[in-house]
Image (cartoon, rainbow, N blue to C red):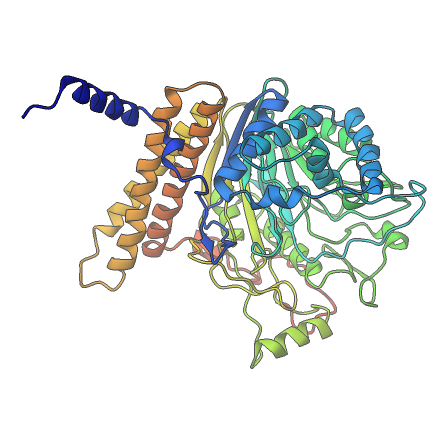
Length: 583
């Protein structure tokens, strides 16, 4: 018996509706792009990238929606807490500085609150703002002094002119901490505001200002810089995250960046965050202290078209403003800076000096990537417990510590451009497979690590960003497949690498699916699709590069790049004079 026409018509309508349904509707309400293990969020092995575009409110709204889409609702649920009367006073006091100094971020925060609420997490503007500016109450603002920051990690450098092969600016920076413990949503953010510069930054890694970042005027925020307390008294102000975002959005060169960084009224959490900045014209600085105003520039201590920073001050004249940690001795080391409040800062500074000074003129993309793969030797002790104790007892003096470490949570480097050709490379976790920690207990491991960088091009709009990532993914797939074809079923590496390559091809399909949807959409939906497409293509890049690197190992030492031997007799090497044996 034939089915009635009305039933056939109904089935046809339902089928057509299903075929044209937006992709988001296919996902379960609690579906996310990251994995959960027994209820715990697992950090992604490829750094998630989020695109936002439009007005400040629109960008905040899009940001919150995508944070929940990628990571789930737990992050914003943690913000949804009742604020005490004193906390609200503190938030409002900080808000007044935000309105004066970074006013565009008021609407951005309002957009976040609205976007999270629309996604099912009820958040007020005050709750979101409190997460950024803090809730510490001061009965008498600026009445209390604070200690110097004794954080262990984070390194950054910039080189240009005579230091690089082609004269272009090359930079690199890392956020060093445990990915799984900081309760932040580690990602990279690309912003395309209606007015101001387009820019990219990897926001708060471990709660700091986030780094590195760059804009389409060729201005680069490399690293938060060591920073020195000086005569500062704590009180209300703006957080370091807002300062970084505002400067990247409006500074057209390093001079303007310095002017802005000096002008901000900073909070307790950001008093030392002047930062290391550089631009494509060859201007660069580290804002070491605001009071007394101390700006370190390239050449001040012998640098030739390069500059670098870790977690300690490099300025001898600031000794009176430094307070060593743990009762350690405060002493100054040439090219290493002040020792006394970080076990590894001096060693990392010496390592960057030796790289950038001795290989001056040889620095390029491959060299910058090699620096983050140039691993420190594991400690030569019978047990890790003994090594941890010895590291603390010796205050790190004489240890082999490099910027590539087990603490690298976000590693980034890039080649900025005054235009739409800037390239930005980012990892989630370290890219050196075997290396040493920066401090006792600082040895971290993550699931399914790929040890690769993804490539992002800061192009003029989201569509072109995604298409550039797609092109790079296609090249990565070709390279991986070319070398996979030399393997047979009997090769030990065939099965595991085939699985990684298969994942790369699936991510390629994902990227293309969402790119097509984005081109047929508008408004916020288009942005969400472009972001999902970008994450598909960057994941494709990462898995394909992992396969390729397994078959064609990347450079891990200067010698691997055909350069002279590290610490050979040919160079002028800076060493820690207090170390018995130079490393």
